Image (tube, rainbow, N blue to C red):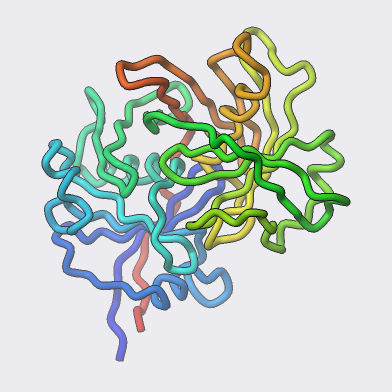
Length: 289
Protein backbone atom coordinates (compact mmCIF):
# COMPACT_ATOMS: atom_id res chain seq x y z
CA UNK A 1 0.00 0.00 0.00
CA UNK A 2 1.36 3.44 -0.87
CA UNK A 3 0.39 7.09 -0.47
CA UNK A 4 1.25 10.26 -2.35
CA UNK A 5 3.81 12.61 -0.82
CA UNK A 6 4.34 16.19 -2.06
CA UNK A 7 7.99 17.24 -2.35
CA UNK A 8 10.28 19.95 -3.69
CA UNK A 9 13.72 19.39 -5.20
CA UNK A 10 16.42 21.94 -4.37
CA UNK A 11 20.19 22.32 -4.47
CA UNK A 12 23.07 24.50 -3.34
CA UNK A 13 26.04 24.39 -5.76
CA UNK A 14 24.92 20.93 -6.89
CA UNK A 15 24.50 19.50 -3.39
CA UNK A 16 20.88 18.42 -3.88
CA UNK A 17 18.01 17.65 -1.55
CA UNK A 18 14.47 16.36 -1.42
CA UNK A 19 12.49 18.87 0.66
CA UNK A 20 9.43 17.55 2.50
CA UNK A 21 7.06 19.93 4.31
CA UNK A 22 5.80 18.42 7.57
CA UNK A 23 5.00 21.43 9.77
CA UNK A 24 3.16 19.49 12.48
CA UNK A 25 5.61 16.58 12.62
CA UNK A 26 2.98 14.01 11.69
CA UNK A 27 5.03 12.26 9.00
CA UNK A 28 7.23 9.29 9.82
CA UNK A 29 9.85 8.34 7.25
CA UNK A 30 11.97 5.24 7.82
CA UNK A 31 15.64 5.08 6.82
CA UNK A 32 14.67 2.77 3.94
CA UNK A 33 11.97 5.14 2.69
CA UNK A 34 14.39 8.07 2.75
CA UNK A 35 17.02 6.01 0.92
CA UNK A 36 14.40 5.11 -1.70
CA UNK A 37 13.42 8.75 -2.21
CA UNK A 38 17.09 9.76 -2.56
CA UNK A 39 17.94 6.88 -4.94
CA UNK A 40 19.13 8.39 -8.24
CA UNK A 41 17.92 5.49 -10.39
CA UNK A 42 14.61 4.47 -8.83
CA UNK A 43 13.66 7.52 -6.73
CA UNK A 44 13.75 11.31 -6.99
CA UNK A 45 17.51 11.38 -6.49
CA UNK A 46 19.36 13.52 -3.94
CA UNK A 47 22.31 13.73 -1.56
CA UNK A 48 19.91 14.02 1.36
CA UNK A 49 16.44 14.89 2.61
CA UNK A 50 15.31 18.04 4.43
CA UNK A 51 12.14 17.67 6.50
CA UNK A 52 10.60 21.07 7.26
CA UNK A 53 9.08 20.74 10.73
CA UNK A 54 8.23 23.19 13.49
CA UNK A 55 10.70 23.04 16.36
CA UNK A 56 7.83 22.38 18.78
CA UNK A 57 6.80 19.31 16.77
CA UNK A 58 10.06 17.32 16.99
CA UNK A 59 11.68 16.19 20.22
CA UNK A 60 15.14 17.28 19.02
CA UNK A 61 13.79 20.82 18.54
CA UNK A 62 13.14 21.71 22.18
CA UNK A 63 16.25 23.90 22.50
CA UNK A 64 15.51 25.60 19.19
CA UNK A 65 11.90 26.27 20.19
CA UNK A 66 13.01 27.72 23.53
CA UNK A 67 15.34 30.13 21.72
CA UNK A 68 12.60 31.34 19.38
CA UNK A 69 13.56 29.37 16.25
CA UNK A 70 10.19 28.36 14.80
CA UNK A 71 11.51 25.88 12.23
CA UNK A 72 13.77 22.85 12.58
CA UNK A 73 15.79 21.31 9.75
CA UNK A 74 15.52 17.54 10.15
CA UNK A 75 18.40 16.58 7.85
CA UNK A 76 18.90 12.99 6.74
CA UNK A 77 21.71 11.60 4.58
CA UNK A 78 20.95 9.73 1.37
CA UNK A 79 21.13 6.41 3.22
CA UNK A 80 18.52 7.60 5.73
CA UNK A 81 20.93 8.19 8.61
CA UNK A 82 20.65 11.34 10.70
CA UNK A 83 23.25 14.10 10.42
CA UNK A 84 23.99 16.98 12.75
CA UNK A 85 24.03 19.70 10.12
CA UNK A 86 24.35 20.55 6.45
CA UNK A 87 25.65 23.94 5.37
CA UNK A 88 24.25 23.84 1.83
CA UNK A 89 21.06 22.35 3.24
CA UNK A 90 20.49 25.35 5.53
CA UNK A 91 20.45 27.67 2.52
CA UNK A 92 18.03 25.47 0.57
CA UNK A 93 15.90 25.18 3.73
CA UNK A 94 15.84 28.97 4.07
CA UNK A 95 14.99 29.39 0.38
CA UNK A 96 12.06 27.00 0.80
CA UNK A 97 10.71 28.76 3.91
CA UNK A 98 10.95 32.19 2.29
CA UNK A 99 9.49 31.15 -1.07
CA UNK A 100 6.65 29.25 0.62
CA UNK A 101 5.78 32.29 2.75
CA UNK A 102 6.51 30.39 5.96
CA UNK A 103 9.22 32.76 7.21
CA UNK A 104 11.01 36.00 6.46
CA UNK A 105 14.77 36.34 6.29
CA UNK A 106 14.70 40.10 6.91
CA UNK A 107 16.67 40.74 10.07
CA UNK A 108 17.97 37.16 10.08
CA UNK A 109 16.25 33.78 9.98
CA UNK A 110 16.99 31.38 12.85
CA UNK A 111 16.52 27.66 12.22
CA UNK A 112 17.07 24.70 14.51
CA UNK A 113 19.47 21.87 13.65
CA UNK A 114 20.98 18.97 15.57
CA UNK A 115 24.12 21.13 15.84
CA UNK A 116 22.23 24.04 17.41
CA UNK A 117 20.40 27.09 16.11
CA UNK A 118 21.85 28.66 12.94
CA UNK A 119 21.13 32.18 11.68
CA UNK A 120 20.82 32.95 7.97
CA UNK A 121 20.92 36.30 6.20
CA UNK A 122 20.99 37.40 2.59
CA UNK A 123 24.37 37.93 0.93
CA UNK A 124 25.74 38.87 -2.47
CA UNK A 125 26.16 35.13 -3.16
CA UNK A 126 22.60 34.32 -2.13
CA UNK A 127 22.39 33.34 1.53
CA UNK A 128 24.94 33.31 4.34
CA UNK A 129 24.71 31.04 7.38
CA UNK A 130 26.58 31.48 10.64
CA UNK A 131 27.81 27.96 11.41
CA UNK A 132 28.99 29.01 14.86
CA UNK A 133 32.27 28.20 16.57
CA UNK A 134 34.72 25.60 15.33
CA UNK A 135 37.68 23.65 16.57
CA UNK A 136 40.67 21.81 15.15
CA UNK A 137 41.35 18.37 16.60
CA UNK A 138 44.83 17.99 18.14
CA UNK A 139 45.87 14.73 16.46
CA UNK A 140 46.20 13.92 12.76
CA UNK A 141 44.21 11.12 11.17
CA UNK A 142 45.78 8.99 8.44
CA UNK A 143 43.63 8.90 5.30
CA UNK A 144 43.84 6.24 2.61
CA UNK A 145 41.96 6.84 -0.62
CA UNK A 146 41.78 5.14 -4.01
CA UNK A 147 44.15 7.05 -6.28
CA UNK A 148 46.64 8.10 -3.57
CA UNK A 149 49.90 6.18 -3.53
CA UNK A 150 50.37 6.45 0.24
CA UNK A 151 48.25 7.41 3.24
CA UNK A 152 48.15 11.14 3.94
CA UNK A 153 47.69 12.99 7.23
CA UNK A 154 44.37 14.72 7.71
CA UNK A 155 43.34 17.45 10.14
CA UNK A 156 40.11 16.99 12.05
CA UNK A 157 37.86 20.06 11.94
CA UNK A 158 34.57 20.24 13.82
CA UNK A 159 32.02 22.83 12.65
CA UNK A 160 29.04 21.22 14.33
CA UNK A 161 29.67 18.02 12.39
CA UNK A 162 32.98 16.17 11.92
CA UNK A 163 35.39 16.60 9.01
CA UNK A 164 38.88 15.42 8.10
CA UNK A 165 40.75 17.69 5.67
CA UNK A 166 43.67 16.36 3.59
CA UNK A 167 46.09 18.57 1.64
CA UNK A 168 47.19 17.35 -1.79
CA UNK A 169 50.12 18.60 -3.83
CA UNK A 170 48.46 19.35 -7.17
CA UNK A 171 45.24 19.57 -9.14
CA UNK A 172 46.38 16.47 -11.04
CA UNK A 173 46.50 14.52 -7.79
CA UNK A 174 43.09 15.85 -6.78
CA UNK A 175 41.56 14.90 -10.15
CA UNK A 176 43.04 11.39 -9.95
CA UNK A 177 41.14 10.48 -6.77
CA UNK A 178 38.53 7.76 -7.14
CA UNK A 179 35.90 8.75 -4.59
CA UNK A 180 33.49 6.04 -5.68
CA UNK A 181 35.20 4.24 -2.80
CA UNK A 182 34.98 5.44 0.81
CA UNK A 183 38.30 6.76 2.16
CA UNK A 184 39.67 4.78 5.11
CA UNK A 185 40.42 6.77 8.27
CA UNK A 186 42.91 5.63 10.93
CA UNK A 187 41.78 6.00 13.62
CA UNK A 188 38.13 6.01 12.54
CA UNK A 189 36.18 8.77 14.35
CA UNK A 190 33.42 7.39 16.54
CA UNK A 191 30.64 8.86 14.42
CA UNK A 192 32.55 8.85 11.14
CA UNK A 193 33.46 12.02 9.26
CA UNK A 194 33.20 13.78 5.94
CA UNK A 195 36.56 13.78 4.16
CA UNK A 196 37.74 16.81 2.17
CA UNK A 197 40.70 16.71 -0.21
CA UNK A 198 42.06 20.18 -0.93
CA UNK A 199 44.61 21.94 -3.09
CA UNK A 200 45.50 25.45 -1.83
CA UNK A 201 45.63 28.18 -4.45
CA UNK A 202 48.89 29.29 -6.06
CA UNK A 203 49.20 31.99 -4.96
CA UNK A 204 47.25 31.18 -1.83
CA UNK A 205 45.88 34.72 -1.43
CA UNK A 206 44.54 37.08 -4.09
CA UNK A 207 43.34 40.55 -3.13
CA UNK A 208 43.13 39.52 0.51
CA UNK A 209 41.02 36.41 -0.16
CA UNK A 210 42.37 32.88 0.27
CA UNK A 211 41.67 30.37 -2.48
CA UNK A 212 41.16 26.61 -2.23
CA UNK A 213 39.91 23.87 -4.55
CA UNK A 214 38.16 20.87 -2.97
CA UNK A 215 36.53 17.49 -3.52
CA UNK A 216 34.57 15.73 -0.77
CA UNK A 217 33.33 12.32 0.29
CA UNK A 218 30.29 12.71 2.57
CA UNK A 219 29.53 10.02 5.14
CA UNK A 220 26.28 8.26 4.37
CA UNK A 221 26.26 9.67 0.83
CA UNK A 222 29.48 9.33 -1.17
CA UNK A 223 31.14 11.97 -3.33
CA UNK A 224 28.97 15.05 -3.76
CA UNK A 225 29.33 18.10 -5.99
CA UNK A 226 29.52 20.30 -2.89
CA UNK A 227 29.43 20.16 0.90
CA UNK A 228 28.82 23.42 2.73
CA UNK A 229 30.26 22.51 6.11
CA UNK A 230 33.07 20.73 4.22
CA UNK A 231 33.87 23.96 2.40
CA UNK A 232 34.04 25.76 5.76
CA UNK A 233 36.25 22.99 7.17
CA UNK A 234 38.55 23.15 4.15
CA UNK A 235 39.04 26.91 4.48
CA UNK A 236 39.59 26.62 8.24
CA UNK A 237 42.15 23.82 7.82
CA UNK A 238 44.18 25.68 5.18
CA UNK A 239 44.05 28.84 7.31
CA UNK A 240 45.14 26.75 10.33
CA UNK A 241 48.10 25.38 8.35
CA UNK A 242 49.04 28.78 6.94
CA UNK A 243 49.40 30.43 10.35
CA UNK A 244 48.31 33.69 11.99
CA UNK A 245 48.92 35.85 8.92
CA UNK A 246 46.35 33.92 6.86
CA UNK A 247 43.25 35.85 5.71
CA UNK A 248 39.78 35.68 7.23
CA UNK A 249 37.97 35.54 3.89
CA UNK A 250 38.14 32.50 1.59
CA UNK A 251 36.81 31.34 -1.73
CA UNK A 252 36.43 27.59 -2.19
CA UNK A 253 35.86 25.99 -5.59
CA UNK A 254 33.98 22.68 -5.65
CA UNK A 255 32.72 20.68 -8.66
CA UNK A 256 29.29 22.32 -8.27
CA UNK A 257 30.44 25.94 -8.08
CA UNK A 258 32.04 28.44 -5.71
CA UNK A 259 31.27 29.24 -2.08
CA UNK A 260 32.49 31.95 0.28
CA UNK A 261 33.78 31.58 3.84
CA UNK A 262 34.30 34.31 6.46
CA UNK A 263 35.79 34.01 9.94
CA UNK A 264 34.65 36.60 12.49
CA UNK A 265 35.26 37.14 16.19
CA UNK A 266 32.29 36.82 18.54
CA UNK A 267 32.01 36.83 22.33
CA UNK A 268 32.14 33.00 22.45
CA UNK A 269 35.05 32.66 20.03
CA UNK A 270 35.65 32.58 16.29
CA UNK A 271 32.57 31.95 14.14
CA UNK A 272 32.72 30.63 10.59
CA UNK A 273 30.17 31.89 8.06
CA UNK A 274 29.33 30.20 4.76
CA UNK A 275 27.75 31.94 1.78
CA UNK A 276 26.44 30.68 -1.53
CA UNK A 277 23.40 30.20 -3.76
CA UNK A 278 20.29 28.09 -3.15
CA UNK A 279 17.80 27.06 -5.81
CA UNK A 280 14.45 25.27 -5.82
CA UNK A 281 14.30 23.30 -9.05
CA UNK A 282 10.84 21.74 -9.19
CA UNK A 283 7.96 20.40 -7.09
CA UNK A 284 5.90 17.27 -7.54
CA UNK A 285 4.35 14.26 -5.87
CA UNK A 286 5.82 10.82 -5.35
CA UNK A 287 4.28 7.50 -4.33
CA UNK A 288 5.68 6.59 -0.91
CA UNK A 289 5.73 2.85 -0.23
